[in-house]
Length: 450
Image 1: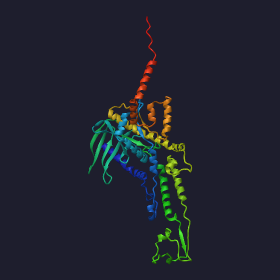
Image 2: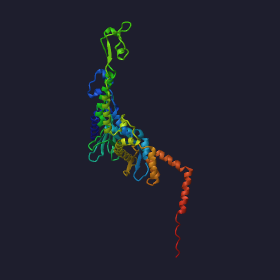
Image 3: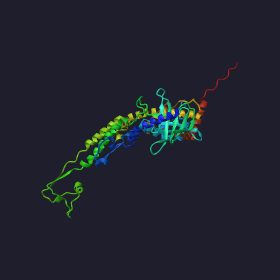
Image 4: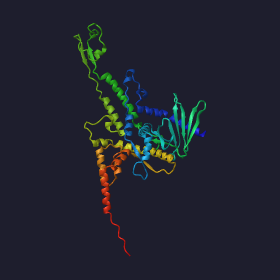
């Protein structure tokens, strides 16, 4: 009964956070409409309501700079082929970035480690949303004490299955009518740790449940939506110069058959003359809409300042085109934010793969490992290649490290090494070098006769 109580408490935590998660998801999806912001719009302006999706732009701009390229075990100079095979087998090239994005949107995601049916060499590693999973973390040690997950919700949103992850066993439950959740299976793993790793995005130590990257720009997004909607209304009413007619009667607005002309014909300028000599026709000046666009530009600059996104990401720039160095300089804050975010996300990946090593190898002696990220900055390939070539020529880094620095994948490095090994010219150079080294080796000292 104690385990079932733990599961109920975890499900309650999932339910309690659902409202806030739906709000954040709505902002990311661009579904937060002005009607939901408490703003009263005339019915005729409802179709003019505009949503500018800066939250999604901010999340994508950060996440796009975070690409895992492998894991390096302690004492090894190259990326571990075994761990990278696990990464590929679990489709983490696709699922991993989605987990990063989820953590940026809602503040948390989870990596779950399990065993595959019929495969004892490759673990099952999945990335899950906090919408249906919650972990109870010990505030003193930071270790996960338990985790609960719900599955297969019905049409009313009631989960029909659930799983409780504990340090030595995973318990599976099904919802039975009149009985609640009933345990139907138990998977013993004896790891001594819960095979669930929280992937938190935190801004402060007190952000125990994570922090949304969108939090700082939600208010600015709402303000910009209001301005864009007002701009649409002003365009509809004031952008076309308003005309006036003085001294005309209703009879002046009829066609040859004596039928009244539609109002829209006069509105769009099809009426250019009147038969009444006393009538006077004129027009007012069109409204200047720059006050709206200037306010929107102000909001976009504030978003740029809050998120570190360069100005050209938000659609505005200076009169003079920026140089390549100026563009890289404008991206420096975003690059640094990506590096800091990668450090937090790497903790989750490393913890998950250590659990996988313990599970597959059945050992507690798990080596240290580090996550290798692609360079989040955007130098030109020519500039990077020139810098790496100089480092190799100076003997500062080996050739294999140069491949890493240039961003070649594990598969590309293995392919290039195979091509170089099979190159006849390279083989000849190696053999000549070996012969010269043998000839230049000092002769062994002659034995001294007694």
